[in-house]
Length: 256
Image (tube, rainbow, N blue to C red; front, side, top):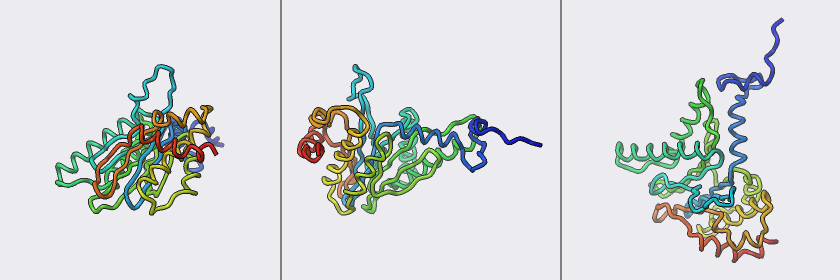
């Protein structure tokens, strides 16, 4: 009588399904995302905000040289959680797709077009032997040519979904829980930036042993924030000083 393969055998190749219909290596890629630094996106009627935390893993690490939010095109930004090397390769690919679209059609690509192109590559790496899935989730945010803001998250398996607000990474659950209570689709862009600061602070406080007082006073050093508004449709970064001012202004609530 033939014996069923032990569970461990199903993760030896990406092309082998387990009896319950899972690709274990894709599940492992999701675990890599959960261990990444927290990143989030918020969409409002006025635009899209992207935010991400940075952690000083080594005493001599220069955080100014660490980038978690990237410009894909003038009207599109992206952040990620998971394996940084995988994220960098996919972001470079997204930029190439955007450039080719402009050269071919003479117009800016939509946010979903860029997202789908990256998701297609991710999916392809779940069905070919000799490859492994990308261990990274990306959040694309931007404003289309019709002035409609869009926010998408891509998953390691190649799926992508549209969101009003979403967080991924180590503190993703905490940030998502907080945003579910505070989010309002009609909030201003400045309110969305403030919500991003508060959400990242809550998630960081829950997943690290840093002193809250010190973290608030230097929060801009540990966070990146950028936005694209519906009027200008231009990717813009928020300065470290502006982030610190928001954190200090909301000090009472953050410590509460």
